[in-house]
Image (tube, rainbow, N blue to C red; front, side, top):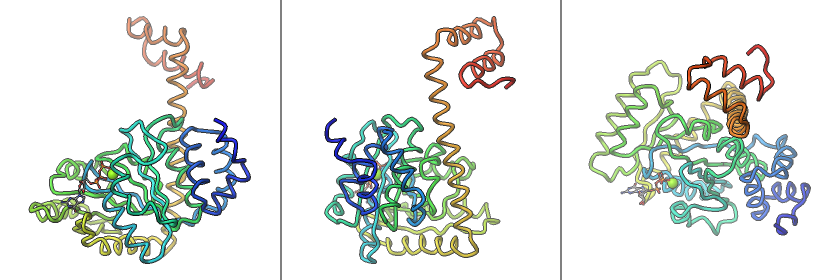
Length: 324
Ligand SMILES: Nc1nc2c(ncn2[C@@H]2O[C@H](COP(=O)(O)OP(=O)(O)OP(=O)(O)O)[C@@H](O)[C@H]2O)c(=O)[nH]1
Ligand SMILES: [Mg+2]
């Protein structure tokens, strides 16, 4: 594409630093395409990152995550903070711009030059969505956005690697999010930092509040007790209170160097998650492309070769690991 040539490594990095929307949009598109130029630019910008505060918003489909983010953005814009929003939809193949629902929900902010909003689907991404999210976050961080929101749908573990990089994780629930309560109770879902029970206009909101409280009370050892806030995102009800809890969590992390510690852990985990995703994809491709390796799988299926011998031969061949 000829248009892609109008940015060089230097001009793209400079554009991102200046917070130029066109440069930001291009850089994130290049990230989505696993383009070498994006890799180089993030590499150049990385030493300047670490200033943005990342807020992850997760929760089941349709609970109002985008609406909540939109309301929070309205609130923090009144406080004059600059904002980036990345919404990640693993179920959507679309990319390059906003998904329809997000576009409607977040439309209020499209004209605000201090707000940059981008949606990403599951297309491409050598290292999976974790890689694309991480790179996009770093770009918005380098662009000087003070707050970056990461939205992803989730009721279990898959979203962890996407928002695992966030400094504060908000779990959004609504009356009827029983599966999430079960997942929290069973320890399948990590305890978030702040819980929003959205759609408080719904008659069952109080019941939900009690259920969440009782699940959290099972875990009384925790140094940070996740606050629970009832919200009505569509009207902005209690959104300042929710934001206040995010700020409280931030203040708590910032005391005693906890934020530094959390970021170190998050970064190490993200690197590991991306490396694992890439290794898995490499392995899958290698086996698909190699008749010899596929034959090993068939031999296992016919019980001519035991599974671990096949594993060993595949790993030896693909990763040159000996004695694994
Ligand atoms: N009654 C009520 N409806 C709400 C509230 N907040 C959001 N909604 C509506 O709930 C629907 C889903 O809202 P979204 O913000 O798109 O939810 P989401 O969690 O981002 O959805 P996905 O990204 O598709 O998982 C929309 O029709 C919203 O208008 C609320 O507080 N009360
Ligand atoms: Mg959404």
